[in-house]
Length: 115
Image: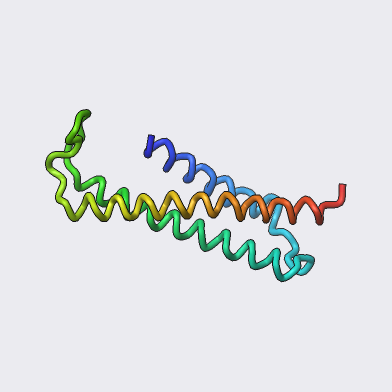
């Protein structure tokens, strides 16, 4: 499931890189201060999520072979388990905060849109 999640994040980032040359950036001169701060917090949450996810993946790769059962990674060191758990929690919290702030950014974009 984590590989699927990482693939979806990669797909989103790739689509954003395609969107920029095709549609360009939104004119931020029309944004209010609170809307800009919401965007900046959103971007910080995304960076934190990506960094924490990378750290969690790095430590998970050091677990060795993973099995089902009460001890899924018998070869994993306690340090790698602890760092993986902490990084994973940071990634989850960051992703939830990114989702909440994305809703704020999107709401602002719709309020400025001229249909």
